[in-house]
Amino acid sequence: MLRTRGGRQRGLGGRCLLGRGLLHGSHDTARPPGYGHGGMSAMLLDELMGRGCAAAGMAGLTVSLQMRYHRPVPLETPLRVLARVTGTDDRKIFVGGSITTRTDPDAPLVTADGVFVTPDPDRARALFPGLRPQG
Image 1 (cartoon, rainbow, N blue to C red):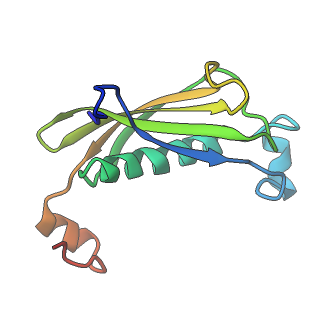
Image 2: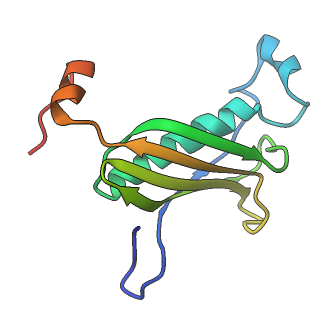
């Protein structure tokens, strides 16, 4: 878990604005007008939660991601996307994340719990030959 000097939990945050330009064409019928597709929320949280692992010094690959959709995510509205490491167990990293609007950060639109794993360095090089050695 990440901690500040005062002992408070801290995590990784980002700002986002889903616009109509990202979601146009035939996909418009797959979501309610004016709202983003749930897959976009999952992608945003997965990406930020993975970066949260790296920011905590534990690069990780997604093993599982459990999404909970509380409310629709509006388009063209400033969003607040947060992620924080909630625990570890050997190579497993447990991460929580959320999406809210910037104007109402206490009302979650989407929340997620993820399990990430830090890969063995030799296995990582085999899976991703383009990786540069750390150090």
